[in-house]
Length: 166
Length: 443
Image 1 (cartoon, rainbow over the protein chains, first blue to last red):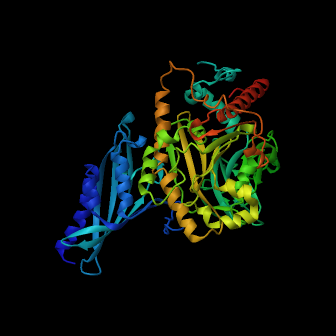
Image 2: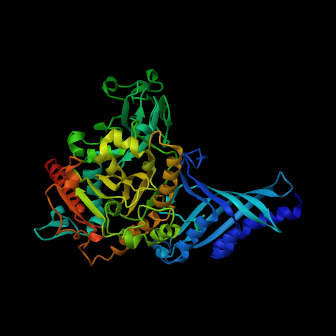
Image 3: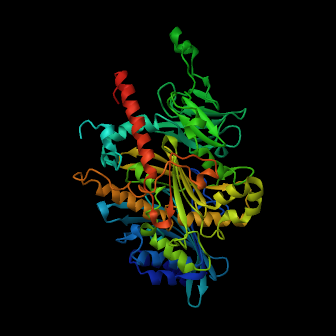
């Protein structure tokens, strides 16, 4: 994979964080392929992550962009008690490592992230952290997200979380 | 208030039933609850299927006390206080696992899987007084530990009713869960745990509150309606033809139920024929109903398009820990299991489309109740005209005799189901306070 594609792939990961923080929901959705999977596994115990979403519990397992659109709709609808007013987030993504076995047709980007979520009421600030694993697929001149796995380090949630918190 | 009187906190007159807001916000009342409810009666601690093999263990709390549920080498279950007899340190440090021994990390005292002390490090050189040999050095078992059909209950106090008597009619509601497979139920691997900034009774009440659904969860209902073809147990929630009901049982337990408008999309529909043959038409039909039940004081099972066990631990008057588990019949078809998990995640998860809105409401209620000028809740009055001590056909067909039932149209939204729970709440606190006063032992 050449340097240009490597940079392009890491750029997608950075742009995703930017779109979430700026609540540019349509731009965020456009990063995802139609058949994309967004997966946040639970932990089975202190050291083992759930690894089969068909037989083990996930915090989220959204298969297909239509389910991401449903989540966005919930945020912008003003009908979800927990999302009025919409919390503000700041994602920090670092340590991006991109590799490809097919000269950049598909690229896996691994990274570490943390997110600070400002909840308005009580001036509450909540932090979540973990690792991302993005599987990107070449689509024309750019990459789209085919699959994203979010490993959540602090799995005892502070009340709740939504897709854009993490 | 300086010295609250439990009789003044739950006012129970012929034509009105009122709960004082201090029960959600007063630290002294919280202290009573820990002492006389959570540390004073039976608590649901988990399922036997969470510790299936010899030497399996899991840890939890009863009130403030950390406990280990452990299966010894002979397969016998024990519920032990997770505290070394020497200096008090916890001897088990993981949520669950398998261990033949529990060794204290502090001074090395060791216990076997039944809690028996098997080592006091350097005992011979220790110069212990003779009376030391007379002391019990084993991990202390809880006062009472019993099982109802694979559901484990424990009490820190010995003076509680026998478990079958304590559970009463709730046993039948538990049967409707356990009997969903000939081999019982299991916890699906993975947990969704969280804490919230609110009193534990906000969860207790919400779990059997049919009134909140249409106003708390419109975004969830909207999402399901938009999916259209997928159907849902909630997509026809306004249907006036639907009846829903509540049952108030003895000892604070209760149930809320409603026939599922459509069971096309539920995991149990995959095994409907097997269920009917094994448990009969009535119980098989009840298994498809939307049902939430409370095992007072610390747990609820909730079933709609999937099945949840939620166990709460009050941390402070305004802070609660929730441990939640996705339950499933053992051996269900893989396709049903997949559907169950997805529907669980989107409804029950604290990262789903519905539960975050419940939690937001608990926290908003707690914030709002900081307005101390308002003393009395208006939250337990709906259904007063319909509440009846007569046994309705819906209860009779299950062999139940609730203390009180309300059955009516979908939008009735009964709240009286909590009245018996709060009467028992008051009874336990009054009894505990009287007992401590007699012993000169204030909390």
